Image (cartoon, rainbow, N blue to C red; front, side, top):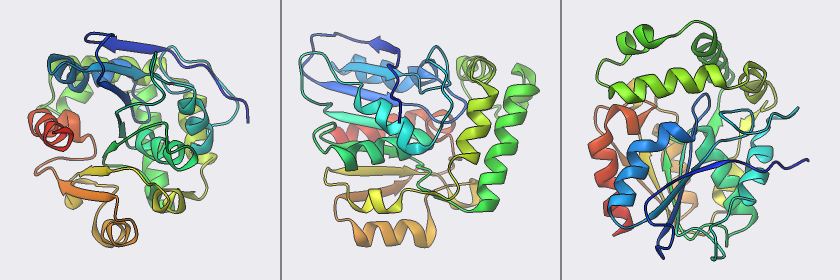
Length: 251
C-alpha cells in the first residue's frame, strides 16, 4: 500500500491545546467541513480538515480501498502532539477513521462518526456509485439546490465544486475497490470513546436498525443518537443540531 501526504485546511488558533480533525465523505472535500470547523474554532479549538486521496487538492492514486484512505489518515497528525483530541468523520471518511483508530489507538483520543458507512450492501454500493457519477458529471448548483433546498448556499456551492474537482476514477474505484464494503470488524476493535450521529432510517441512513444495535452491543465504546429530520449528510441537513450534538459529546 502506497500512502499519500494529504493537504489540510485550518480554522482557529493553531496553538490551542484542543485539536480536532474532520474527514469528509465521498465526493466532498476539506472545504465542505467549514460549518463544523468554524463552530469548533469559535469554541477555542484548533480545527483541521483534510482532503482524502483523489479529492480536492489531494494526490491521485490507483487504489481506493478504505484501508488506503485510513493509511493516509494515520499520517495526518497534529503539530506538536501525538494524536487528535477528536476526529470527526462523515460516511466513508468515518469508516476510514474507524480503520485508522483500530490500527493505532493513539491516533485519536475520541471520535464522532456522522452517519458512518461501515457496512454497505451491494444495493447500497450501486446507489452510491450512481450518486457519485451524477454528482460529478451532471449536477450543478441548480440541481443540488432543488434536491436540498434547506442547505446553506455555501454548502451547495462547495459540494458542487468538490464533486467536480474529485477524480471520477477515485469516486468509482471507491465503490469497486470496496467489495465487500465492510469495516465492521475494525469498528468492533475501536477502543476510544466513539459517538455516532445517525440520520433518520427512512432518509437513507447508512447506520441504523439492527446494524446499529449490534454495534452498540458489541462495542461498549460506541454511543449513538439520531439527528431528527436528517438524511445521510447530517451536518448539512441539520447543521445547528449536529454542532450542538458535537459540543455535547466534547463537553
